[in-house]
Image (cartoon, rainbow, N blue to C red; front, side):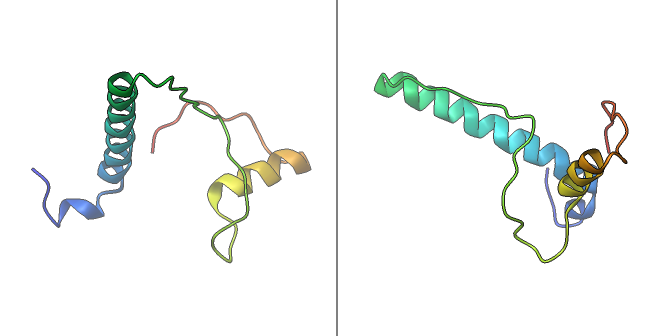
Length: 79
């Protein structure tokens, strides 16, 4: 059950995004199979491009740290 007060929970939002991506990929695979289309799914480890906001986001900040020699090894952490 999803209701308006749950939306503020960050962990819930992260899990909801993962769920949405999984459902979308499953639908793509089903559609490809129905239409006899070859489908390739890429899971990139990093996607970079122009920033959509005026400030640096967390992902870009990590890249800048690594490029400048200030970054450290990141482990598999969850929020």
